[in-house]
Picture: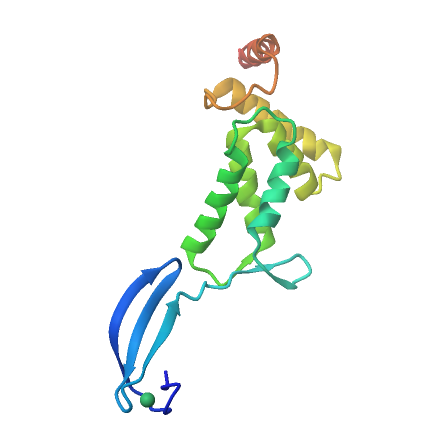
Length: 179
Ligand SMILES: [Zn+2]
């Protein structure tokens, strides 16, 4: 950093302190002894999303959040759940330290997250994102969820996809068919 007074390129740091998002340094020019201040900030690593048509777009957590919100509309999820999922996904993406990521990979992360939160939100998101043009594919996905639910004990935060009595019927039918 050249001295703003004489243009000399060397200075010494006489004071350094942390400010909100960086470091503020008080410097003294080694030639004319003038004092000036510099700020040092971390350059955020740019993350670009590769879209289906191969165009690049800067990653936006807001976009992820909007998608999740839409899927979770009117679902009785605890406050902050949606934001936390978006935060977690963003943190994970930055943790991976990649420069680019296909939009499909982000979609998969959202689906994984929703699957563990709320099946209805998951199906909603999947039906838009995966483009379930074929109803049988959608049905297969729901069947998988229902069978997961009857066989694996679901997380306590998960809301039942089917009313309890219906679940029992499904489970009984399954047992019967196994015999
Ligand atoms: Zn100077």
